[in-house]
Each structure stands twice: as C-alpha cells, then as structure tokens.
Amino acid sequence: MAQSIVNFLKDEHNRQTIQRLLKAGITFSVAERPATRMDLVGKIFVFTGALQTMSRDEAKALVEKLGARTSSSVSSRTDYVVVGENPGSKAELARQLNVRMLSETEFLQLIDAEERKT
Image 1 (spheres, rainbow, N blue to C red):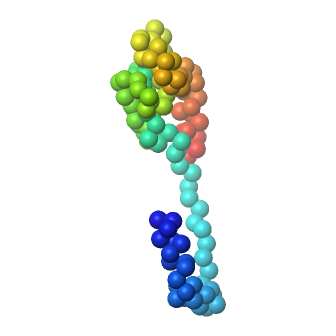
Image 2: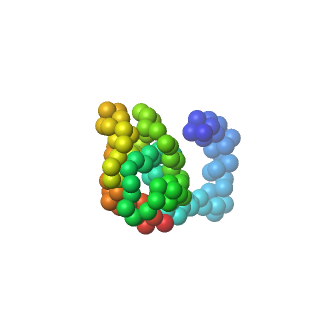
Image 3: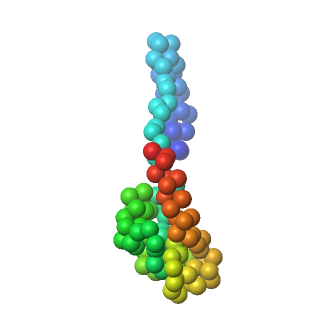
C-alpha cells in the first residue's frame, strides 16, 4: 500500500492535479479515528487454574470481545497465560517457553485498561 502511494506521488501528472486542487481551495485533512481497543487484537490467551471472580468461559468471552483469541494449550505463539488457583502443567510450560504469565488480578487490570480505551 505504501509503495502504491509513493508511485502515485512520483507521477508528475498526479502532482500537478494535486496542485490545481490546492489552488482551487480544496483542503485535505486527517480524520480523527475514535480510540479503539487494539492492544489485545490477535493476542492469544490461555487460562489455567480456577479463577475467583469469574468462570473460564466468562474470561474467554471478555478477551474475545476485545479482539483476542483463546487457546486450550500453551505454545510459543501464546501471548498470555492467566494463572488462577491450583494451576496445572500449563503454568510450568509457560515458564519454560517464557510466555508472559498474569495473575487473575493482573488479568483484570489489563482487561479494565482495555475497556477504558473506548
């Protein structure tokens, strides 16, 4: 896409057209985009152990609402492992793979921060 813009602006005819539009009073502006919750889009979450404030299904629904995905297994592609009480082998695998691990409190803070961006 960027290369197409460069090519368009390299063309002398296109530059002359833009100059004529500017002289005629046409103005260009950048539209403001509303804030979006982009930080978690495409991120992969895995949940292990019992959560105290919600069920795993509720936690999964929350991250999916923010554009993230969930998985039932930890891999090197996992972005976050949320660790509840009595976590299983997923927590150990996350440590081995250096995957970012979040407590339930940290997870809730992350979700809250994302929801406030809108």
